[in-house]
Amino acid sequence: MLALRSIRSSLRRTLALRALAHQVRSSSTTGHRQQEGTFYEFCTYYLKPSNVEEFLYNFKKNVHLRTAHSELVGYWSVGFGGRINTVFHIWKYDNYAHRAAVYKALAKDKEWQERFLIPNLPFIDKQESEITYLVPWCKIGTPPKEGVYELATFLMRPGGPALWGDAFERAVSAHANQGYVKLIGVFHAEFGLLNRGCMFCGGLKMRTFGQPGDTGHMKTPKSCLLVSCCRRQELFLEPVLIHLITLCVL
Image (cartoon, rainbow, N blue to C red; front, side, top):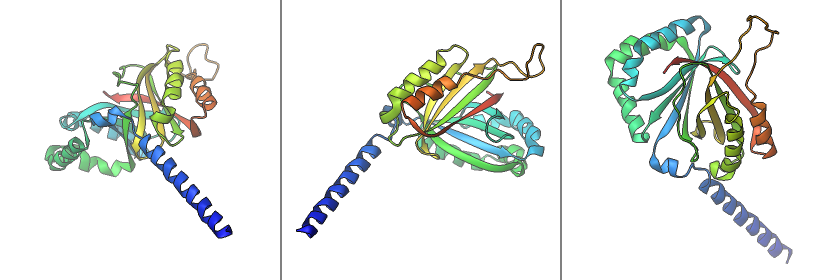
């Protein structure tokens, strides 16, 4: 009898875990956005400090060779938050076949290889790539050409936008409606750091150090509103990471 009860209990646990696993898998996508195929690749390059300016100059001079193959949303350098001497860029692709075709073409593009890639590879200390989708309730915005940009990262509970999308939308809207930023996009990572939500804003007007009347502190965005809202909803597991970045190429 005890053995039979143990078997039944074990069976119930197994079935419950399978149901939960199916539920998490089915809700981990970004819905119709994935079915459309369009995604955004977040590329992060950690540069050697002595070569940052040279790398950025070379990229600006040769960016037309790269954008001939696929669309560049923007190219930024990290000013505050996280690791400095870092450049961050976003590329748009129609689907995975499109990305594969672009990389194949780049490998055969001798001008791109010789004028930029080969000479500048020694300046890169580390590279990271993440595949992200826009959450279903957000459309990509046009990055403004002035001001500072804010990239806020959240490690969310497993389940994807189907689980935390509504609450996160309310939190992001409360943040964006303060009027000091322009919302560019809200993304969900599919490959890379999983269960990650990213909010990307631009056009921040910030007072810098050394100006008349400066009290020694920089006027920072009121991201605490967004953080507080997310915490009340118990949306994320890890602390928020906020980067302030400046535009290099658009």
